[in-house]
Image 1 (cartoon, rainbow, N blue to C red):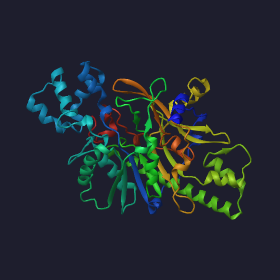
Image 2 (tube, rainbow, N blue to C red):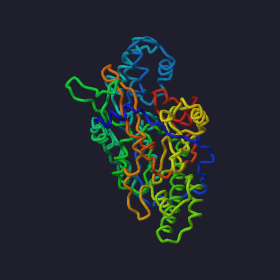
Image 3 (cartoon, rainbow, N blue to C red):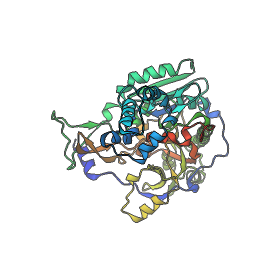
Image 4 (cartoon, one colour):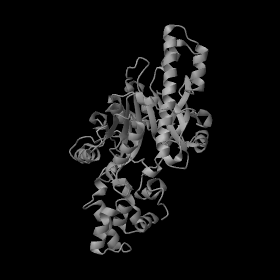
Length: 458
């Protein structure tokens, strides 16, 4: 416990950013091919999050009866939500007026708390898109995506889910996979041993009514354990809520193939350089140029064979980046690691905003991290890396939360695409903004990316 207390006292460590990634740090992709499909590919989807926060504004309306632009927009566009089909008969049978407080309360309660129970469902099971013959959830859309860029004969997806939703998940996927013999879905839970203790605002252990210390889930960084357990050559990672309407799927499919193609080409070059080093017949100047020009790793001292081997023999990730539109979240940066600089995805909370120079760098960021990764997790001998060996444990997060009205501090492991992959090799590739369609609030489902391309505006 003392070790954790020390971390809380230190606070969230700062990352030494040198500059925001620009087009000079991005990898251009000239050739897109399907040869990566000869490898074993799995799509990894973190999906344990509940949908509660999606409906935060609706919950607040029920509690305080205060109209906001968000609430008005929800009721004005009610027919445009996919789940309207499931509440229409209730509204009609009760003759509810959505312009009244009573009518709105009844609709919200039906949607969130009663028959539909959307407030307690995982986001993976919320009906988000509407088609002529069906309504779909993120699970359906991730399956559909995977069928278009994973191995054709065996489309493998792995979801991380919460244990409380296991039965719901199994029942839903059983129906979703009917007639899809080539699709295989597996799942796992965030491991209990990755939970972390909480402290009060004075950094003392947070004690529950029963006298025990409160332990909380350790954030998405804990999922590096789940990722490490997968038997795959290439792992595609994407958040569960980042899906789009199928009428707009082309950019997403093309970009996934682009990321995988770029990664496989660079992975093959890395392996050739490693074999050259091990043979004793290597061109260190050529390898240094490859590190600088392709992997964007700039080593301060003269490169040795040992250092080159250490820098090359690491997992490789290809990270899709979109143009910065002011969304909250992390971004791509050049980071100083002491002996060398390289590419990292950093969160705003990891950057010292009291340092004017660092704040300028953050504000100048042209690109944003949409969590769109393709990971190559086998070494030059085709043996799986132990991904836990490449985590930077010093990139943990401290955040403030509450428990039954009491304030506390929570400790999160280094983020899955932040410190958990700190010691990976990294490529940044620009992908179209149309591939980024997160659903953080229910009204995000009214954005163009979640609506039929042919029917928007009708």
